[in-house]
Picture 1: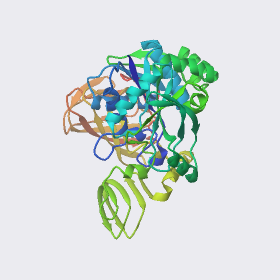
Picture 2 (picture 1 turned 180 degrees about the vertical axis):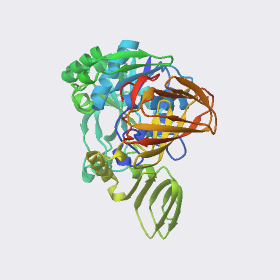
Picture 3 (picture 1 turned 90 degrees about the horizontal axis):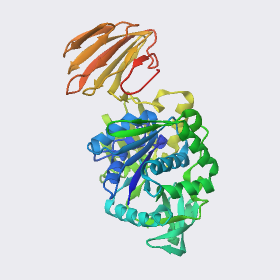
Picture 4 (picture 1 turned 90 degrees about the vertical axis):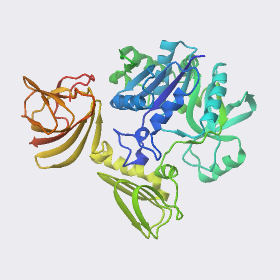
Length: 480
């Protein structure tokens, strides 16, 4: 048996703002106890039997960030594939593209296990057993879903109803899918015992998915074929990546895999499972990962609590004090503070939508921004100046670039820098500095084996990140 876990890493996690941002979405949020969701998903995939490759579908802007997370989890695993989207296009496009890639590289009989990158599963043994049952049905030509045993009447999840008249080994044929129900209806599903939470995980033969997609969603199938014909592949030392053509990808219907296929196909089965699953879809769900004190308060970071109950505080940079309040969510980040009542946790997405509409930068990035070569943190900015802390990974290199409107002064805090400033190339040691005038072609590299840390002071009439003209880049970035 050949198994290819397919990790779908998309979405912005808008209900987990201000920690989740467009450039730092939910799968990358640090969890209590260490690690993040994409690392845990990747580790679960590698722990399964017969895995020949892990294929990840993600936005091209998250490519290097994802590689870093995978490398931190399992640096020696080299069978990695990526399908890089220019923008989000929902799950039908992602799954159909993944099936075509798996079929092309491993054959139509290869099994795919589709796993969202932002879900948490506590019971790994039960998960592995459910996957084993799912692969048996998938080899028989079924499109297999994983139905999670409901623990309470949740209105934020979709549901799967099993067909008790058609048992299939450890599973059942699916009778119907139900969208997010009312509380009364969800309670009825919980009492009925025929309904399961729709986990968004699937298992099937690549060839079966392609055939059923062509039958049930021919518009998606044909658009995906055209997109693949216009897209290009790059082969690296430990991974390959398919870069999707933006023009043709935009023509793929924006529809979920449930609507496009699962609700229409006659070959859909479900494996009921109890695996300790959560999609961590709100701060209420995130708070459950931290222990509660005697008053029901859950704290991440430093906080002083007085006469307050059932609150959740995430404040990892500075002290937070709560006095005489109940049932609050308090999430503090360097550039944004969230205070919400627990009963309105789902409404946080309204705030992120408003920030995006207004063009406010806090929906997009944190003050610390990851780059392929490392990261930078904006420490302070004002009229005609900006101060950054820059960290360059060993052997990392910024692009050969030029700025029209700003000059830069670099001061090395630790490590060694190799600098190209117009025609001069030289090394900078700790406590040494250099000046890059506007209009000078320049590049910063770390030739050492430890992180290079420096302070950059920018000055000029315009200090936006899009004032960059790139001439060369080892990470394949072009333009601004």
